[in-house]
Structure formats: structure tokens, C-alpha cells
Length: 252
Length: 304
Image (cartoon, rainbow over all chains, first blue to last red; front, side):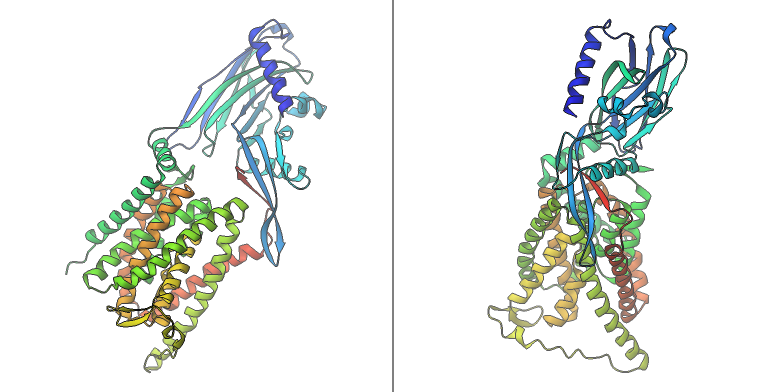
């Protein structure tokens, strides 16, 4: 993971400062750089779009769009039967996993890079997500696989094998659904241009997801002044209970 | 329409939450209990994290207890000395419960502890209630006098530190009420219940309090415990969601009024019999979850 980080940040730095370095130039953008979670937030869509230059070499190149969430620790617990009851027994904590990962590509990943190892090098694809550090007392792989599957079930790790559509020879676009249950924080929108399974150009744009308005204030209140917040909850409960007994009191 | 819960950090359908509050409020008005033992599992089945469910249900109980307590207070049917003594045990129990809650949460055994406590407690209380109300129902049908409870706890009268409880016309040791308070305080923090269905039988059968002061006194004790637990859960576990609480209470206080009206038309034995069936149904559902092989052996939580 760290290796991937260093590799990619080098790549991004070089492609920013030296446009001539990549054999082929890539320009991309995101429809918005901030998603605000409000009281009726049920998920939203962002659009990632871009353009690859050198129209004459259009054939045989692929675009992969990745939106990845803030790093998080995922704790996976496996249940075992102890004295007839199923309890959480073994556990593994995988640190440095993205809290959200969405990949859209112009073709299925298996066709973009027939050798699985090629994409593993860049950490592209749900199956290639690796933790930075692991805290476990046993073999990690089944726990990592379970984490990938469970995050997939929650709609937090997803791949759309044909999610990137070409509007012309060079112009592409991808819709990325951001579900309601996402973590707040800084996300990265990464766009890769691949040829023959190798990344030839890449770009990264930050995307922020944050609570806003009343929700944000309530969350801050609960964490900054937990006593006052708790007291307010209790007072609210007492007042609502008292009010109901006044409103519904039977005429004597 | 969906609403976003700022502390649980998830979107829920507000009608579902309001409906849960309404339904549980109706049952709590009908049976004269807080309804925490129904609401916490319901919220967990719906997908609310069990830490938030346990901590937030408590303010729903505070709200549904206050109107009953005010009515009893107007009738002067509250033994404040007894409530105070029980609360002193309750405070220690609550602090212990919240501490245990935090320890189990770190160990990843929170869900297990909540389910196990529920299974043991609901199984025991449910079968006792079923038995008692069945006997009472049969006696009532036969036209005989209500059964006398031959329980005589001589040992309670032998304990030291006796205190006069004027309203209850009792002169007993403070140790049993403190212990009852401790147990309900701890259970309240761990399970998100007010503990009415433990305190009320304990007051009647163990302490031998006159029934006319039992309801009011237990409500005061429950309000004290749930208030304290809400404060402790808010400060030590950040697990109280005020939006969830407000929605539940709004449904709950309305449902409770209808429950009280329907309850007036049913007899006491019949209500206790129905409640026993309900308690046992929740017990069986939770037991099923504990002993049946889970559909997925792995479970995932965000964080360490």
C-alpha cells in the first residue's frame, strides 16, 4: 500500500509538472469538489469527465476512474460456536483501507490487463486493495477477502466494468454514485489512462464530503459538549412527555 | 422521506422510526412499562448500531415515564424516600454498567453481551409472568378469590441499617432497595431498558410495598436512572442521537395515550398474560439469533 502510495504520488507529481513526460496527455475534471450531507441526503451522483489527446492513437487505450474515500481501519470479526452460542472470536484490524472505493472502467479489468499482477502493482481494482498494516494473530487473507465482500454488500466497494463511456474518440465521461452511508472526509478522484495494461498517464483531484447545516452542528455539539448535549436530550424528553400528558389529559 | 441521524451517521426513513415509537408507546401504555426491552431490539433489527440504540432508547423511556409519574404525584402515591434510596444504588449500578458497556465495545463483544442479557432476563421474567397470570386467569374464571402470594422473605427483615419508609408503611433495611437499584441501573446502561418489569415485581414480592405506591415510586426511580444513563452515555460513549430520540418520543407519547385507553378496558390478568406472551416472543427471536448458525460468519465494523 505504501509502495503504491509513493508510486502514485510520484506519478501524479510528474504528470502535473511535466505534461510532456506522459506519452499521452490526459485532462480530466469532476462535476463538483464538495458534497454536503444534509438532513434529506439520500446519496448523489458525481460526474467525472475528461479528454485524451492524440486522436490518431485512440485504439487500444483504456480509461479507469477511481473514487476512493478517506483511509479507515476495518475490523473484521469471525464468529465461532462457543458453548452452543455463536460469538465473535477471531478478529483482524486492517488499517489504511479506503472507506469508499468506486471504480469505473471503459472495459472489464480482465480485458484491460490480462495479467492480474499488472493492476495489482498500481492497486487498481477492489481485489487489489491492500491494508497498510494489519493487527491479527492469524492468517489475514480470509479476513481481507471478507472485508472486501462485506464492503461490497454495503455498496461501499464497487466496480462498474463499463462505467466509462466515450462520447467521441477522445472525450470520456463516468457517473459515480455516492451512496447515503458514506464517511465524511477527503476523497480522491483518480483517472488513469492505460495502454496494454500499463498506466501511461494519471490525474488526481480531491473531493470533499462533509455534513452541513443542522446535522453538522448537532454532531459537533454531541462531541464538543457531550454533557450539555445529553442534558438537552433529557430535558427534551421530559418536556415532550409532560406536554403529551397535558394535551391528552382526559376532561375530568 | 429520509432523515439523517447525525450521531448514528446514517439515513433512516422517518415514518419507520415514528411508527416504531408509536407501536412501542402503545404497548407501553397498555402494559404500564417503559417498553425499552422492545424498542432496543427493534432498532437493532432495523440497522441502528446497537450502541446508539441502547443509549437513545433511554430518553424514549424518560419521556413515556414522566406523564405517569406526574399523575401518580398528583395522587400522592410516590414514596420519595424509597425512590431516593433505590436511586443511590442505581447511580453506582449505572456507572458500573456504562463502564462495562465501554469495555465490551472495545472487545467487540457488545452485541453478544446485549443479546445474552436479553435472552436470560426476558426468558426468566417471561416464563414467571406467564405462569403467574395463567394461574390468576384460571382462578378469576373459576370465581375464586385471587391467590395469596405465600412468599415470606424473613431474611430481608433480619438485615441491618433499617430505615422507616413512611409512605410505604415499612421499616426495613436499606440494603435490598439499594441492591435492586444497582441491578436495574446496570441493566439500564447495558440493555437500554428502564427496568420497570424488574423493579415492580421486586417491590411487590421482595420489599412487600403496598401496590398503590409501587407504580409511582418505580416511575421516579426509572426517570432518575434513564436520565443519568443518558448523560453518561452521551459523555463517555457519544452514543445518544438527539434526532432519533425526538422522532421516537413524538411517536411514543401519542401511542402511549391510546395504549392507556385500551388497557383500561382489559383486565389486569389478561394484560399480564398478553405481555408475558410478548416478552417470550422477543426472547425466542433473540435466542434464535444466538444459537442458529449465522448466515455470514464474518462481521465488519469501521474503526478499531
